[in-house]
Image (cartoon, rainbow, N blue to C red; front, side):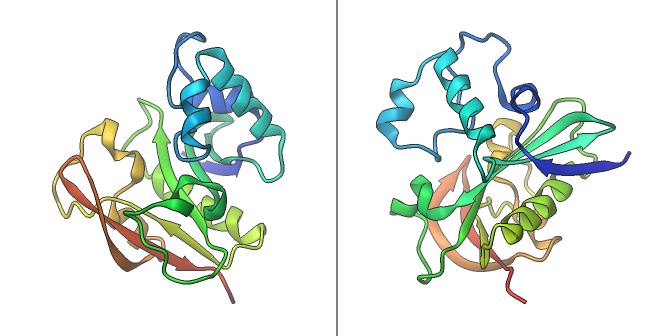
Length: 191
């Protein structure tokens, strides 16, 4: 298996990883932390996909995709924190005034999990953020130790996966997901 990570600029590939089976379904499309809550609630069904399609044409793209032999198998949402709901979060602390970027969602397609794709995505997100001038990349994974995390709740990532690619624990948060505390982890991209 040879995983390649690229900017998520091809909408058809993004749709394969985070889109719904039915085009009329109203699912997250990884928009809940990217856009204001009011707009998130207003966008229904196909309008959500159309919004993501516009994001894929923008620079920077809305994240990165992992490919296995040309097939899209994973997604990571990454963007400047100032453009996300984390900019206004009361549960995820702000540590300083640096224009940090956030990595808040990792999704691996069924049949491809457990193969190290999340590590490739996190590393790809680091390179993507660095290439766009980010001084620091933050993530907000669960601190689950050795406990299993339900697949639907694993989208925020797990502490160990971020530690493996050079992130360090920077702060505790008051956020809890699936019974596990979330922490703020950082990777310095300067130098």
